[in-house]
Structure formats: C-alpha cells, structure tokens
Image (cartoon, rainbow, N blue to C red):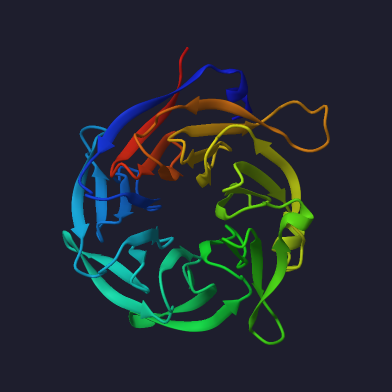
Length: 351
C-alpha cells in the first residue's frame, strides 16, 4: 500500500446520495456486506430525525435508498453503528436514547431502546465480538452496555471522568479497551479492572502529553490496532502508538504515546478521521475538504511520519461531518455533510 506514495491519485466522485432533508451527521458501512456477492450497504443518520439505509445495486455500482428508519427518534440522530455481524444497527440521538434496529424482511424494526443518558447521545460503538456496546453523551458520561440474549441490554458501567461533552466512543479493534474523546480536549482510555470487574480510566491523553489543545472530535485505529489517529478543533491530526503485543497479552495499562502531528492541511475544525484497512487516513472538515494521508517511506527519522496523498477541495458545499472507508478494500470512501448529501468516492490511480 505504501507504493501509493509514488502514484498520481484521484478521488473521483462516483455518486451523490440525496434524500435527507437536514445535515447528515454520521455514516456506517455494514461490515457483512460488500464482498462475496453481497451488495454493499451503508447507513446514514441526520438532523431530519431519520436513518437511511443505502444498498448498492448488484447490476451496477450505484446505491439506492433501501429503507428509511423513522418515527423512533424525535430529535437529531447523531450516530449510527452496525454490530460486527451486520445484523443490528445502533442509532444514537439527541433525544437521549439509543435505538437498536434489525432487518425484518424488507423492512427494519426497532427491537430495543436504551435509556439512561441525561441528554444528547453523541456516539455509539460495538466491541469486536459484539458483546458490548458503548455510548457517550453531552452529560459527560460514557456508558457500557452488555448485550444479552433476547435483545436485552444491561448497563454494566457508567464512566465519569470527562469534564465536558463526550463527542465519540470507539472500541479498540482487537481487545476490549474503550476510547473516548471530548470537548474537554482529552482522549481517555478505559479498561476493565480484572479484580473488581468495574471499568476504570487507565490513561488520559491531554495537552500535557503532546495531546490536542481543543475539542477532540473523532478517533480511528489502523487495522492492526497498534496505532490510533485523532482529529480536533485545534486543526491538527495526531497519530499515537502502543506496544500492541503487550496490549493483546492482557496488559491494558500499555501506554499510548504520541508519534506525530499533522498540521496545516485543514483551516477549519476537523470533524472526522478514518483509517482504511489499506493504511490510508481520510479526514473531513468544516473547510468542506477531504484530505488523504499515508505513512511516508522516509525512514531518515525514527518516528513514523505521514504525507498528504491528496486534498479534495470543495468535496461538499458545506461542513463535512463524517468520512468512512468501505471495509472491503475497494477504495470506496463515503462522506456526509451539512449540505444534506452523502457522496461516494473512489480512490483511483490516474495512470
């Protein structure tokens, strides 16, 4: 994948998906689709209080709206996330609830509603095995829910540590360690205490250890889970590393260290970052641009460094809230914007 560094690349707009009537906040590719003859499925959620399910047509590469999930949330739907099996979709809303949806024939039905947060729920994330769900809110709390049979969800821990609105929660891809980022400018790392079975904060990445100086909006992991990328209101993108062997051997206290900072690429808040399976970092920001980065092959420095592959100016007419790579390695990137549209892009060689 590093050979990309030498190639002339183009991010080509494949399709614009219209239908939402307010800003589109979040996108999620269904991980069980898009390969082995199964058409790719993408979920989107919006300030219009709905979730849309888009499916790729088998006879062409175009997407169509397969279903609209409505009448469940009565305020903005801020985030959506598929379970690892692709069978359930969790949606988080400003109405302080999380809904769990299942496909039933040609329709989707809400099979569970999770309540407990005091106000707007900002993000939802499933762990790798689908046994745990994490949620976070403007109430400064992170909740961990155990997924039980019969579509039951039991809150097993309420994590208080952030001093402001929590913007995003994300599980590590291979171990049950949870990450949250916040308006308080920090990223917190949470793990289960083996002795008490309760969850605790094992590390805080803040300005004092080369962290961000303003709101941290999003984070993403590379495929092996030894690196994490974060993006912020401070206009920077930061890459962090961990001894992943230590982490996977059960040492949840393995420390994350700052590896490098990319700055000067966006001139307004960076709202979204996502690391593809092939190693390409995508960012979307309030300057309406998408940037793509790849690790540089320049080994003259000890630390990894990242270079800009390309910048797509005016990718949308307004702020870009979410960028998400397709999980199937087909170089498709989806983006969502305040302009109420979703765009599907393909990264391709110009040669």
